[in-house]
Image (cartoon, rainbow, N blue to C red; front, top):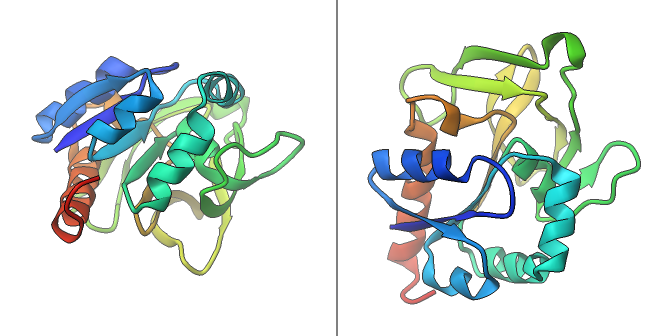
Length: 196
C-alpha cells in the first residue's frame, strides 16, 4: 500500500517512517496530481490555520474532498484532525468539512500543552502510546462516527467510514499500530475497489 503524507507542514518524515515500519510505502505529497497514485492520505500535525491556507493555495481542498468522496482513506493527526472536521468551536472557518464532528483547538490548555499517555484504542489489542502536543479535542460526533478512544472522558480517536482522526501524534513514538490500522483501511478499500 502506498500511503501519502501531505507535505505542506508538520512531521512528514516521522509519518513516512511509521508507515514503513507498519509495512506500507510512504511518500510525501506536494502536488494534487499525486493523489491519483496513492492508496491513502495522512494529513499531519502542524498549525491548522496555516495548513488550511496552504491547502487552498495549492488547490488541495476540493481535490482531497473528491479523493475522500470516492472512498479513499484519509487520516488526520492533531492539526490534521482539525482540518478534517465539519465544525470548529470559535471563529475559525472549517477546512475540508469531511468528518461529522465538532472540534476544539488547543483544548488541553497551557498547563498540559504536551504530555504522553497510554490509550486504549478500539481495534488495537494493548494500550497505544500517544503524544499530545497542544492537542485538539473532538467535542461531539454525529451518528456515523465511531469513537475509538477517549482520554479523561474526552474523545481523542474517531473513525467515520474511510476517515480516521486522532488528537495526538502517533508518528512521534515507536508504536506504529495506528498506522497499521490505517493501512488495513486502505487494504480493505483496495479489495472492494479496483483502480483509484
